[in-house]
Image 1: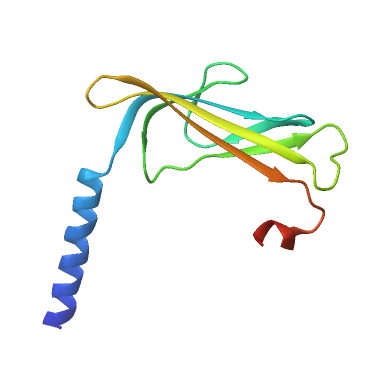
Image 2 (image 1 turned 90 degrees about the horizontal axis):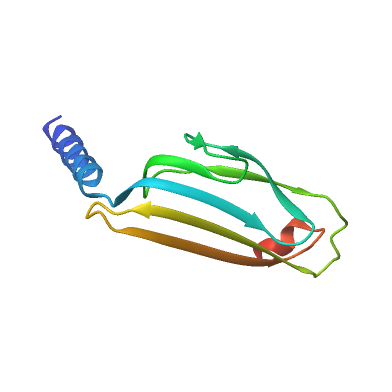
Length: 117
């Protein structure tokens, strides 16, 4: 029983350290853009809506997630490239305003297995 208690105590200690030392930012504004024939739909997560394209988070950390549904309004051709961009304007704990941008381009396919090759 003492071994189990020691392991649980160590796991709890690691979890507390992770919570106290994980990176985070304040006052984040998020915008997701999609390429031709695609548009962003519903945003899912804990945020405040600024307008139809910008969403504000009081704080973001490395464990927080959100989701965006994508809608297509035209036929997408097989093997055509579609692009996505996620931009976050945020304030660091030191007070600096920064922007982080992630870009992704994927081929259009009708077979789900082709995505994971």
